[in-house]
Image (tube, rainbow, N blue to C red):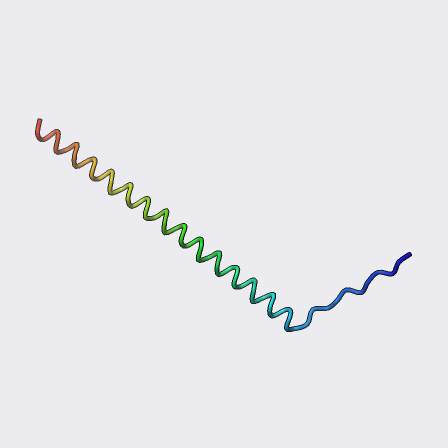
Length: 65
């Protein structure tokens, strides 16, 4: 039966680098999510503006009649 290999303990430096990469990745995800949210917000605003413009044109055509 082969002996089980002893698990290698991580040094403090390795732990720090892993923690740093995790925080950087988390930050990047937050930034991406914010960008996506901003895009969605601008699309919603554009839709609202288009609807308002359409309502104005409908009112104008009714007023002309």
